[in-house]
Image (cartoon, rainbow, N blue to C red):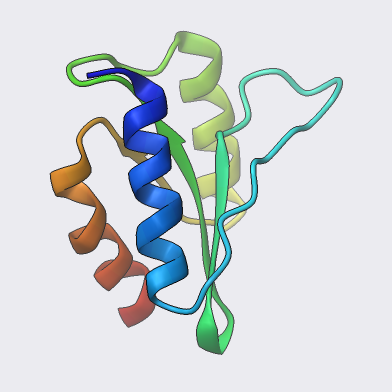
Length: 93
């Protein structure tokens, strides 16, 4: 399975919950997460998608830590089976 498969499953799952999942592009700031998850009632998080078994690069880990230190949730998803649980967690926050 490729990363794009995981990413596509995330986009569909977020849409099914009435949300948006735009691609996050940040010129000049390498290592930012792939997607923003924007759910109803102001619930949001950053999500990094990976192919199964793949881990974030070191720079990505640094960016994720920076975002978390600012109070923003960041998730790493490497399999479609993780998506619903993570979306539940975002909505419950």
